[in-house]
Amino acid sequence: MKKVIIIGATSGIGLELAKLFVQNGDKVGVTGRRCNLLEQLKLQFPYNVETECFDVTGTENMLHLESLIKKLDGLDVLIYNSGYGEVSRDLNWEIDKQTTLTNVNGFVEIVNYTFNYYVKKSYGHIAATSSIASIIPARQAPAYNASKSFMSMYMAGLYLKAARIKKKRPGIDITITDIQPGFVKTKMTKGLKRFWEAPVEKAAIQIFNAIKKKKRKVYITKRWAIVAWLLQRIPFFILKKLE
Image (cartoon, rainbow, N blue to C red; front, side):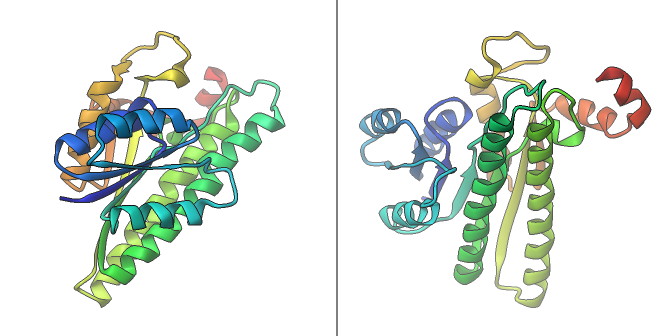
């Protein structure tokens, strides 16, 4: 039985992942801003779920994370699934601020703490939900794509850091998984129909399996790897025309 914490689990991918880990027999700690939804999940799985209600844009992330680790009596897998993104055609500061606080500041604070926690205990797994949007810039949502690119680059850096630490101290085993979804039918899509849009249940199963297999990077669903390959090869002058 593993001790799993999912940051951002009141709905969507995070909620479905929580259910999958519970069904796998793991002990799961869930977080989010909507306390009532967390409590509903705990009522559904009273012996396998612990909750901690907080907003990652706040100033007490470490206190809440440490509290949840204490409730679980340890931590083996942390999944950072909190995310925010809105179209910002007029470069709205409030949108960009909220995006950065959630996808960059909150992410770094929690993942940084967790990595150092794992170094002390000699093992652990960090997974983070970035996005296929991390690959290219976007005129209509520059902060969102940039923040997701930051997440992916930070996770890549942690992967290299973990490899170097393991080389120096063979007993340490820290796994890093960068999750890059394409379109998934969640509340963030606001009901818009998009091509290759995956049901949240299907996306969660693929993410769950990727974490179990300790993948370094995974595209959700798998066929988005084709899109990622193409996007990485688009010249900038073509991007200007597309945007």
